[in-house]
Length: 211
Image (cartoon, rainbow, N blue to C red; front, side, top):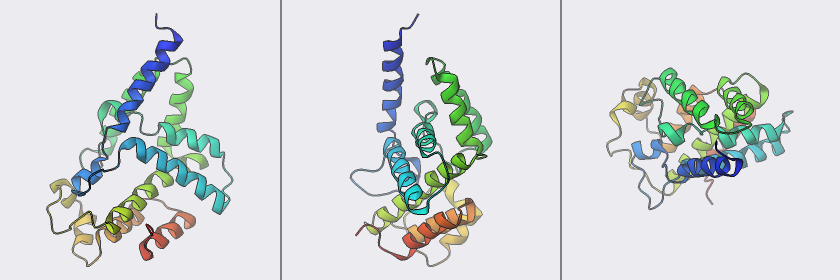
């Protein structure tokens, strides 16, 4: 029987993998940079974004619950890797991810409780889950903007065929938008941003945010 100390170490070591898993979206877009964001760094940034959004826009939510959701929302990627919507049908990805998370958390005494929180995030039905989901998507938008300001992507370079097959992407690529403008516009067409998240997106679209 695994003792509690061993369970802690096993879970920590598994999650530690996320420090070395590079976000697939940046790989697919050939972001040219010495050091590209890991999944673990994305998780940290979503949490910091949640703190700022809750502070400035005064959401009536349980922020601690949101932070916990964001801490575990990529847990399945320790097993299945970082899979984008362009690589796999979202329903199939969700199925694999849920199976992986269930297996990971089965080794923890509070595993059932943590798994419920993970599934709450994925369902996007509570106020906290919707808020956390928007933080997850907007963080990616802002990171894209920062990379674009550094000149890390050349839109003339080849990108993944799976990305080009998406009609929204193809349409935006035919415009004269920059890479980050294209990315942010895609997000606004694809994700249910509320007025506050859209306001932050608008600001990022029209300002140099890395200065």
